[in-house]
Length: 309
Image (tube, rainbow, N blue to C red; front, side, top):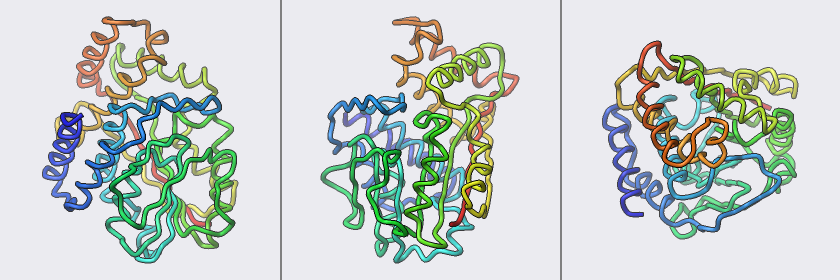
């Protein structure tokens, strides 16, 4: 366990040093505690389609993902929202917050705000967290446990393997309800691997088929702007970003590690679709990591939408 925490902290340190990112000591404390103070129950919620596990390795990956996205997008909150919203007294909700890393990072930066996180799985830090952060378990698709017009900002990200294709509109409609008039939504989702050599494309196709088998849309991310417009959101900004695994910088290596970890952690769901089991799967992961870095370049894209009620 200690090795996991140290490895996660070391990855974050390398990212911050390479990109001159100033992540303060409190944020570092949050990242460490959010990996080491969880309710370890192995939650099984039959109505949930999210198919990544909630064990320690996946929690480490989520923490790594947070800081990689923070650097990719130069902060936790889009400039369009940050320029219009006073975060010092904002009421903020993170939907599908997982271990709460984004929420606690932002709450530490803005101690005057009021921050709430909800997730279907109770994997929230129990002992160490900012005093202005509150967590509760709920299935947001069955309704968020808050009155209408409650929040100045709602954040939702990386739920591409959590929601079925017809659930995105339901989720955004429920978020619209709890946003204050003029409140903001920040949504960030990714695609599957989009390009690469034959081995990479075969793997990506198998991953996409696994999503389709669960009634999920592997190409949902760039479509979210149209969904938001139909629900009367005003789109303030759309920020697509592309990671090319042919690059050798530290940030790219972090996203590479994340991609391989996704496949490692989701082995029970993917091994039949990928055609590898047992020791074969470990060999597949090693090969996959190597092939991702070869030509033609393999790419992974992210799509962040900033919108207003």
